[in-house]
Image 1 (cartoon, helix red, strand yellow):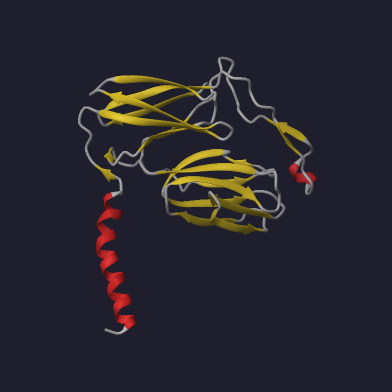
Image 2 (cartoon, one colour):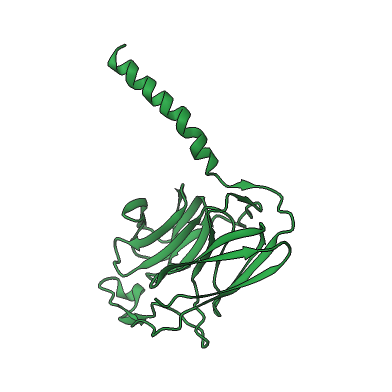
Length: 240
């Protein structure tokens, strides 16, 4: 058999082997019988890190002057604002909720709005609301997720985020800009409010892994057992 034909046969066999494996990893929407609720609070009881110093080096009429930005935003009782909370490895459960509109990252006054967000796999709109060039660059780790030049105010470009995971967002034109997008693998996720609390409803009964993540602390995992129709409370301290 010619080498090219043998190579094609090998690829075909690999495809037959791998397709079931990959498809088995996809989240399946099903009716959840007697689902429970996970609610809780994310806290940080350690000494807060020093604020990050922002020193704009260009476009100061739009970007503003030197300032300090907290690395963790805390409520008076140590609740952590804008932490991601999600369930790890849930293979089937409640249907996805369709977003009212396509999620977006807005470049506004040389900052990203929202600073953190959770979205399903799919499209995201990248918007420039400033009268200066922004180059919005997203990364899965070291791999580029998108890289978009936006020279015009009011410009909007749609890009796909095709896999689950954490995306770090930077601006190649303004190096101090930083934002975060978590692309969820299932619909059990939340972003904590100003008091650090969160709620996830209609969770399949069983034992799950709750993951809490914040940019400075990284992630912390906790096991939780959800009983039918019950509410379970989870408290996670991100202090290392």
